[in-house]
Length: 245
Image 1 (cartoon, rainbow, N blue to C red):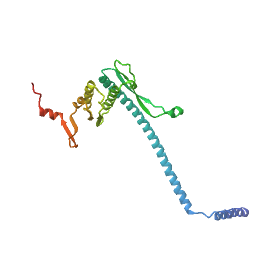
Image 2 (image 1 turned 180 degrees about the vertical axis):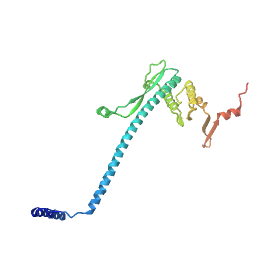
Image 3 (image 1 turned 45 degrees about the vertical axis):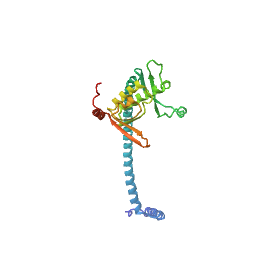
Image 4 (image 1 turned 60 degrees about the horizontal axis):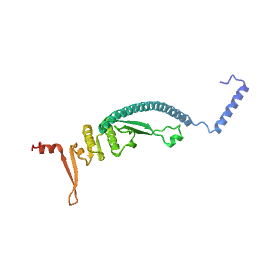
């Protein structure tokens, strides 16, 4: 191809080629595996780029789903609190013969939050405001022990009515109630038993009257505990109607 070139030009090109050969030999020559490695790295790079794009799309989709779930949870939570408040107020009025009660969700602030206002607190609590008939009482701190028990029972039952659990264990929640309030408590137990299975530990006779099955533990002179059970429906059938005197 260089036959038509002048001799001087051919000599210069030949010298360039020789210098390039020397540099190539000094560099170790051409390794044929380098080209194969380059192709493999290029394919790997293309694969990782595709994976990265898939991950970015997945991250975006998950963030949208997270936002949607957070919105739905906030709405469900707000609706749940509203329903609990309605039932809480209704049961509170039944227990106290009037008045009102309200449950409010509040955001708690710690000392760290006050020092660092840029970081919002994510802890929440509840505040209960009550209005008892014929008393100037607006918060729980001013209630007596029995009144606090009644308020707690009303709130517990309100939550259970709105979202009934499979079963509910009540351990002497009626211990501070007088006879009149025990009757109201028993009526609420009767209504709640239509929605959930109740296991009640009590010494109150009014509460026992509302039970379907009564279990008792007694100890004889031998010091051995014995379990007694009574089904009121079967007992009523066996005993029959009361005799007239």
